[in-house]
Amino acid sequence: MQKQQSFTKLFNISFGFFGVQIAYALQSANISRIFATLGADPHTLSFFWILPPLMGMLVQPLVGKYSDKTWCSLGRRKPYLIVGALIAVAVMVMLPNAGDFTFAQGLFLGLNAAMWFGLFSLIFLDTSINIAMQPFKMMVGDMVSTEQKGLAYSIQSFLCNAGSLVGYMFPIFFTWIGIANEAPEGVIPDSVKWSFYIGAAILLLCVLYTFVTVKELNPQEYAEFHGIEKKEESEGKGASKGFISLLKEAPSTFWTVGLVQFFCWSAFMYMWTYSNGAIASLCFNWDGESTQVAEFQNAGNWVGVVFAVQAIGSLIWAGLLPLIEKGVGNKWAYAISLIVGAIGFISIYFVHDQYLLFVSYALIGATWAAMLAIPFTILTNSLKGDNMGFYLGLFNCTICLPQIIAAVCGGMILHIVGTQESMLVVAGVLLLIGAVCVNLIKEKK
Image (cartoon, rainbow, N blue to C red; front, side, top):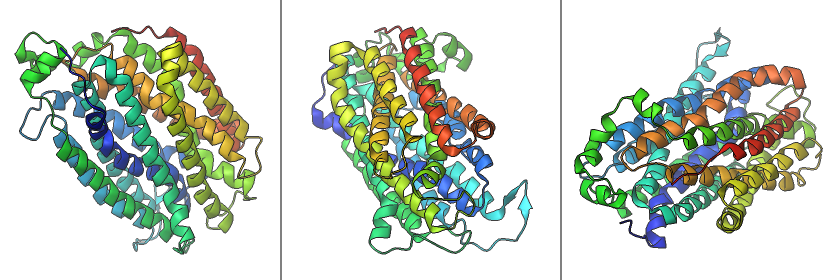
């Protein structure tokens, strides 16, 4: 029998996600700015975005599969949580200093030494964020009843967007209190550096809070909670099946939700990659040349602001989602959220006032809130308990693979559409296609 959890316990399970999302928000809002400052060309900028989803696609299924079989005194998922957080903290201190080190001059494969340092730092950062992020989703699947999963993932979505809000606002906040927002050519501004430093400290504290306050189920409790008849299955026998066998046994819900995910995450990849250049051109009169000028760097700060507005929109929509789902069901709530976000993306093309961008990005927040909650509610309700971690880890491929494909195609599409702001229109069209594909999902319990 599945025991109901108090709101406090549901909150504690996901609270560390607040800190993890600050790190993820700093990465999302500043990577294009960092690599452009280090000398990357706009037409190759999307290639730097291949690494984060690629590492997620490799790491999260492994975290899921091996944590399914990890039963120790520290817990089942929590050991991976703390290891990922510690690595992320170390890398967040190093990454924004890529331009400060003295490197030999010259290019290798088209990249200077500072970009190579930043590239490897980005690999380790995203790997560690993925290791730390996945256990939160798995613990909800492990410990929360079917009836409460919608609420649990909504809490997680709320904390995720609150963390995003904080992370996005850090650069402009530090600029406001007097920390330099400009630096010599090839050097990352101090406002960005301090954002990463403080974000790393908050990440560590939040993860430690969840680590201390949450007690995971032991094998016997887990088996009883999920109605697994044989205790041995919960101890790893069921999780010992091969990757291919488990993939063949994946429910149809896994694939149909994954199809919708493809269009959603491709759209957001283009938002993260091209918002800085698009906003600089549309609202700050940037000429598209030097990235060291005030117009580009100020636009970089404003990207943090509009991404924060997106997070506020997500917070509001996440609060409304349980009511919308109750009224029209998960699928309709999903489709409506994608359509609202599509309108937001397409509207950016016509905006030349930096404050009007608040409306566009608030609408995009509706899609983000739905993406963080509804797919996991639909999927976990269709899964049995014995391989929950593996399937949630594998499901991350439906998040990462679209971003990789979008990043590979980004430069080519940019050549076709011509401007970075047009890439955000492409993002809106992708969300509309995703909304149509929601109709293919068949929910199961």
